[in-house]
Image 1 (cartoon, one colour):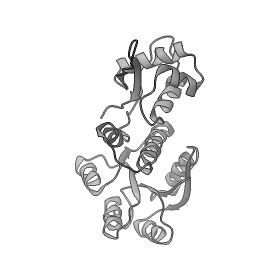
Image 2: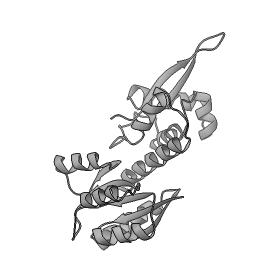
Image 3: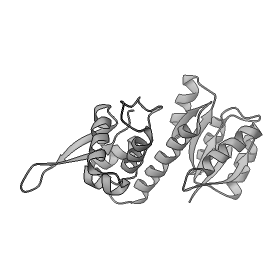
Image 4: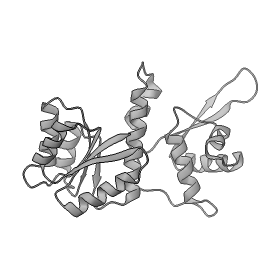
Length: 226
């Protein structure tokens, strides 16, 4: 279970964000804080895996909180969740090591996508060992999720497209159409149809796996745009 601290000066917003987090499987909010001082004190007593951090706090900024965490040796991951839109703040957050930056206002699906991508990254990193270039690219791209979904052609279901997306993002590597069908309980023909659509829109990368005989196997992996 991934433990989360939600930090926002607005009590109502913090409650809503915590409720959003609680709806995503694998995540649990352990506490809410409404100031930088309160957040830092909570983290000293009970470190968490992830902080959803507002920038505009009454005593210090969210960037100050991240800076103090890093200076104190805390390795807690941070996703900025804020109305601050200026490029300087975004750049500073990146340089201080924030993993993502979610601009308010946002929907539940926007936050859920960021959290699911974060969970995928954690699973990849927890595997340990050495990484080839493909694995490194996957790690660096894991949190580069699209801000919105493309409009689907007639005859395609957003629910099915989301099912395919989740299966691909949760996979350890590229999947064949049959492997995707087995994971999602779709027919192979339906899985193939959605994979081809997502490949055309740039959301999926196609690679070929050559065997000893016969035609190469088509394999697909999720590659959100950066």
